[in-house]
Image (cartoon, rainbow, N blue to C red; front, side, top):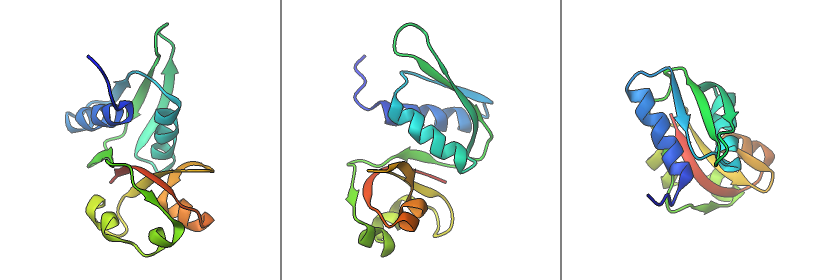
Length: 133
């Protein structure tokens, strides 16, 4: 099996485990990008603790689920956005999030992976990676 998008696979694993009411999910393979996105999800209170497990191959993450995720997924194609576009709340913000104040978009910026609200606060743009609510 060839895995083309490991982030999409990781978020699908979380979504599926969340829908089935599981208390934890195992994500493999591990990557720095997946770790950064998990850190953002943890800071926003969507997941609990997560740990890296070195299995001698690519590694994996064990993620504690809190039952707070309704939907999570990647944004494809990855959309580059400027600060001005973020501030205007364009159509893709309405497309991916349930409501104006519910959920976050996750961006990769030159200052690391963060939510769209944090990027607005820092007045920077980036590339849209994922959404969660």
